[in-house]
Length: 162
Image (cartoon, rainbow, N blue to C red; front, side, top):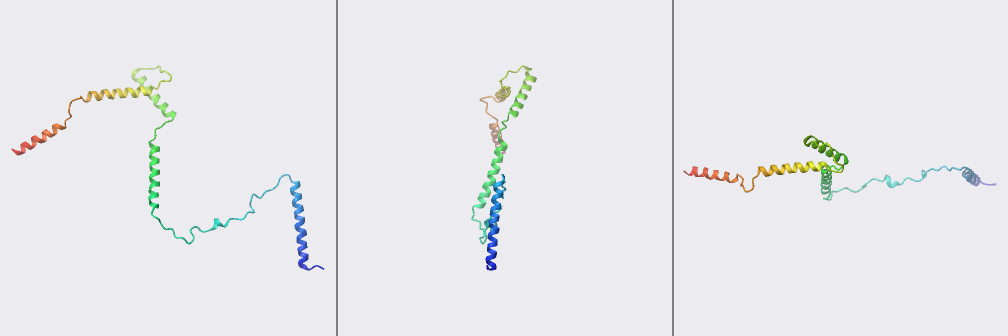
């Protein structure tokens, strides 16, 4: 006669053997196998570890410099991006349309040639106008009025001496 423990072991062995055969039968007959996608994997305990456990965080002196340079870098990058020229096709077309409207109003030009950038023509015109103004406003060879101020001061000193 078998002891109770031996009987229990043999019953467990029979059950596990029947489970193995039923599992193989199910997987063999089923075209689609159900997966658990790793849900049986243990959770790593390193994720639950306290950070800096037992260590005090002391500043080493370089942190403030890094904060300064990070902020300065972000500000500099923002300034560069804000000051960058607009290079989209819409901005070019807007300026070209303004130039053509300007030429149409000032010179009465209504026919425009394909491939000619009229905004360059308008900029050249403005530059020539400014050059003419600069040439008329300053006569080469004339000295500016700085010497007159010195003469007035000299005269004031002579009047005070008398």
